[in-house]
Amino acid sequence: MDYKEKERELRRKILKMLFASQSGHPGGSLSCVEILMSLYYDVMNIDPKNPEKEDRDRFVLSKGHACPTQYAILADLGYFPSEDLDGLRQIYSHLQGHPDCNKTPGIDVNTGSLGQGISQAIGLALAAKLKEADYNIYTVIGDGECQEGLVWEAAMAASHYKLDNLCVLLDYNGLQIDGSNDQVMGLGNIVEKFKAFGFECLEVDGHDIHKITEAVKAPISGKPKFICCHTIKGKGVSFMEDQAGWHGKAMNKEEFDIAMKELGA
View 1 (cartoon, helix red, strand yellow):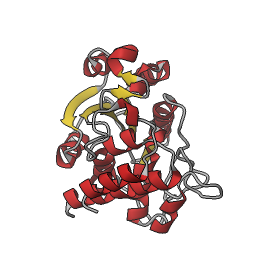
View 2 (tube, rainbow, N blue to C red):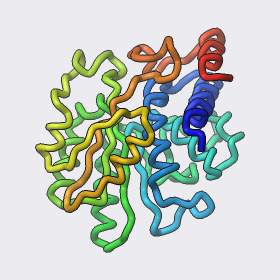
View 3 (cartoon, helix red, strand yellow):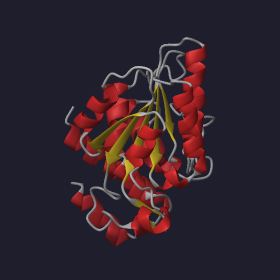
């Protein structure tokens, strides 16, 4: 696979969805493209022809507002027709503004309220341990989301139950809806925090698919894994990059045309 071209293709699909719906979250959707690509194309044991197979790996998009990225990849893999992407956030469409496992093939759990997704991932990982099942749980969280107490309760539980079948990936772009993390509620050294909670911790360039995959596949024993993926909010579109204002803002036609041109349309 030509990863560079696939990244650009997925980003174009994300922007087309968001422009058509005139709502949604471009900044955080664009920042996590390579993270989700690594998991879906290189790591997870999944089968688009059998989305419910029992031994599949489970994925939880804890930062559920970035679902356009997940939808674009699921369509690319064949979970549903690519034409469905045009219905993002539209009435009667199965592509809701946040992931819904009751509507969309390939979605394992509903997410949306921040902090809850990682908590659900803990439950899935613990269930797999209790069943002695040989599958893994992956979850992507946001940095603004780490200001939620639920995240740290979940982290404590993951360590307590020695959930080495759990991998938490942080989309660390430094921004959230109201500004920078430091302005809203400073996270301090987030890697050291997760390490203190008993995680095996790694840091990578969140836009380097190969480095992400290496980190996810790195062997550990008896600990949950935390990977801090350093990313850029709005990655790939010059006027969106590193701009908190594009957390949840719709593009006008001129902005859309510029963005698509920059992405090679």
